[in-house]
Structures are given as structure tokens and as C-alpha cells.
Image (cartoon, rainbow, N blue to C red; front, side, top):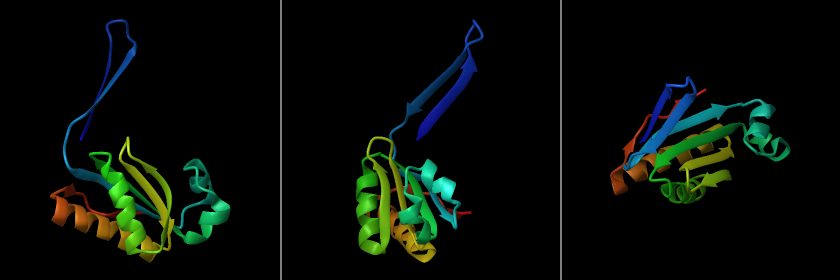
Length: 126
């Protein structure tokens, strides 16, 4: 879990402290259905290749290394394309048809919860 403290110093300067707390959890599991092309570009995805995929799946998890395992589960579960895996922040982004992205996220959450004892969030969708 990340803890974020935002405040002001005595001099009035903005102070931001972010601390990572150990835990086994998925804090974000979101599907962006039919995103605009600009969303693909801002995520570093190629809209020419990925726009036809129709959905983007985004997950955030700790410990961050679990994003590699989650990416493997996603690829083995459903026809998706990995857009980004960050083993340092715990972020996983992938694209695919809406049903494939849904299946991949569901499989990741089920595996992490049942096999590894993770606390998982609900899947959200926009």
C-alpha cells in the first residue's frame, strides 16, 4: 500500500512524502472500453496497432514484482497484447478486445487471491 502525505513546510513550500507499505494487494483493476486514440498515445501505446483492440486493462499491485507474473497470466489466459509492465511500480497495462481484457483481469485477480493470498479490489470499467 502506498501512503501519501501532502503538506506545506514552514517556508510554505509544497512537501510530498510517498511511502510504500509492504502488502500483497491489487489496488487497481480497471478496464477502459473504447478509449480515444489520445489515451493510447499518452500511455506510450501505438494507436495504429492497438486502437482496433477496443480496450485497455490497467492494474496496480504490490509487491511490484508480481506485475511480471500477472502479465504472464494475462497472456496465457486471453488474447491480449502487453503494452507495459513495470516491475518497480507494480503497473501492468495491456490491450485487447473488451471480453479478452475482462477475462485476463478476472484470471489475474482469481489467481492472486486464491493461490497467493492477495487482497484484491473489484474490477472497474469506464
